Structure formats: structure tokens, C-alpha cells
Image (cartoon, rainbow, N blue to C red; front, side, top):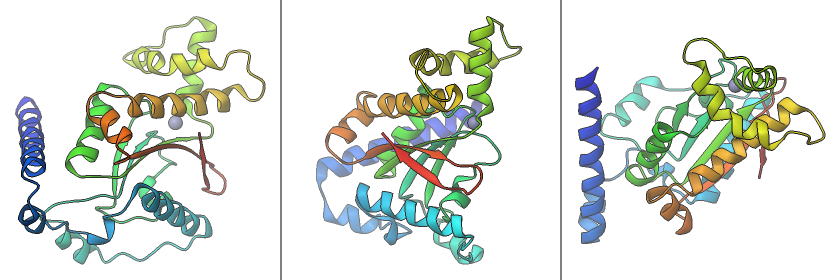
Length: 236
Ligand SMILES: [Zn+2]
């Protein structure tokens, strides 16, 4: 476990160094030698968002694309350049690759119950944006989120959940407190506020994501997944 963590860390640091060197040289040759495995994934933040939502419309209609798994795998042996990164809840009903009708190599997905942005998740997004050049981050929450529901009950009833669950409650607590007294459905209010806070955290995470956001290299948006029809509604 320790060794794996080290290897991942070393690879990440190595990749970041390569990126820094390539930027410093500004060399076209470096660009040519590192041709992305999926050239169709090189796009602007707005194009990436449009593509994601087109995929969601196909999914809603049940029109998923067929996948050539063998060809897809072979294309991705040498690398990856996903066009969107998604911070999604771990809920088994929310499957980003299905919900946006995407293939392997298209989405860089980070999942945690309650889809909050903590240091580990921010680091994963930094990898996606800085090393893989992903132009879009979507924080994806959903209706009837058990993690948010548990956080609300724990805070309101002054109860402490068992095991490691209190850390999850602590991560979601700012959203629960922010919507106290707000009209409407408390669970949906807290769920959407939690995603909004996640977007804010990612946009302002210094020094990497904040710079990428300010330089318009990445767009950060939030969306809520509707359980009944699979629709993802974007919101600010
Ligand atoms: Zn959830």
C-alpha cells in the first residue's frame, strides 16, 4: 500500500515536471511526440460541456453508443486525455460514464459519498487539469443523497455517527448550515449548496486550479442528477 502510494506520487511528480519543462520550452516537437490517444478529446471548456450534455441527452433517451472495447483499450495503452473531470457522489445509481454516455479515456472520475472537495479530491483534479489538460470539471450531486441526508440528521439531532462517518458529516456540514431557514426542500437545498461550495473550493484552490480557472483553461460547473429520468440539470 505504501509502495503503491509512493509509485503513484512519483509518477505524478514526474508528469508535473515533464509538463513544466514542456511549457518552459514551448516546443512544437514535444507536442508532436506526445500526441493524445484521443485527438477528438482536445477541446475548449465550452465544447467539453456541450459534449457532456449531449451525452446526457442520449442517456435520457436510452440511446447509448455501442463500445468497441478492444479498440478502445488499445488506443489508451499509451496515455489518456479525458475531456471532462467529474467529482461525483459514490451512490451506485449515479454512474457518470453511463449518465454521459462516455467511453473509457473520456472522463476522469473522482467519487466520494457526498461529492465534497477535500485535499485528496483537489489533488486528483489538479492532476486532471495540469497533467492531462482536462478543460472541464463537473461537481455532480444527485437527488435523495444518503450522505447529505445523514449529515443533516446528525447535525440536527446532535448525534455522532459511528466509524469514520463523522469526517463525512464534517465535510458536508458547511452546506447544511448555509441553507438553514431557506425555503424549499432542505435535503435538495443542502445537496445543491454542497455542490456549489465544491465548485467554489475547486475554482479557488491555489496555486494550480485557481490559476487554470483564472486563465480560462478550465471551467468548473455543478449539476444535479435526477433519479427518475437521468437528467442532469446544471446550476450555478
Ligand atoms: Zn449521494
